[in-house]
Length: 264
Length: 261
Image (cartoon, rainbow over all chains, first blue to last red; front, side, top):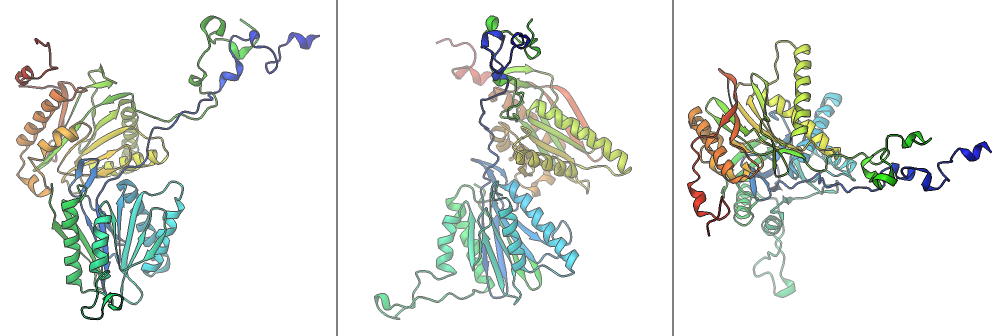
């Protein structure tokens, strides 16, 4: 008898309430309109030789059609002693979303430094390359939105270069272009570094023609190719320009050069 | 009143109609900032030979409504660093309190050492990047100005995505389109900064504030301007009026004022 006087909120009719109890929680899921990424433009390029590796990048930072800065480096020294990168033996370029680039660079730099403090020896480029892939993959479902190129000298003192996609797939290569003008620079590199579509003159007719074999190029030649690649990319791509920064790794350490590019 | 405590104090459906339950948020998803509400427009800054000039107007807009006209968006941190805020005003106020507590903590922990503008910029960029990574951004773009560790002029920007960059002249928001090209005439390159005097820098910034007032619909003619030098510290003036406006050009443009034809 008594129980019939006390309304059971789950079963009684809606007339008993001044509001509908089932409505107390928000059921409409509202869509996030915040997009956590942006593209800061620019391009990077790496080429290796017999005893050196070159990493280059333009210094323009953009958002949309605006230029944020004419000097925002995207090539970094990894494993240096201080914030200037002095004493580093590995170089890294990151192009895409600059904030992720900075965060990733700081993270890898810390890892390589800790390795030296803990093991008393420098991290090899091969080990660093694997570590970078692991870091990128650890954010597989909220990726660092960057295309990375890592370069240095391998255990035999030869130029080593590794390229990555944003989630950590990587391979060792002779040369690689990344970023906004990658599609402009990479075919040029295929032809001029790996000699694609180049044949030995007079070596035969049609299918008997012998392809020109790729061989490591001398440093002067590589620097010239890098400059040509970037001046041309600057002409044809609005997000590339202002300055060309090159980090050159040799047995002596990391050298840096800077060339002005068109600022239009 | 009925016997259901959860109904007490609520508007009754039979009198007021059905209440939209999405406003209650008792157990629903946590709502993060989806858009800025009360906003400030551009912030401009220029480096000169031995310091920095920065300016922002005193308006906080609610959409297209000029809602608050005495909001100071240049927030001094200490006598060698200052932050200029664009974007959401409530997020600015949150960050201001955060920076204030940082300052208090720093002054307790390490007497004698003060955070410089570069330190402040690093701190702010980490806060902003963390918040964007949590998908809960602070909706601002800021210019951090002051002196770096070597007492050299420092100017750098941070935004809601944690993106950072620096340049001899910087402008956020609408100023990035209108003022930045004008300011770059002064110094397009770090090497040109040594030829910029304080007078030239201040005049250029004031001129840009005027151009912005002409063309940015969410701007105001009352603004704040600060000069930071090693000798003078932060010299902040918060209630400046735009001078020497000329609306002669408006005559020839349809849409300004009363139309005769």
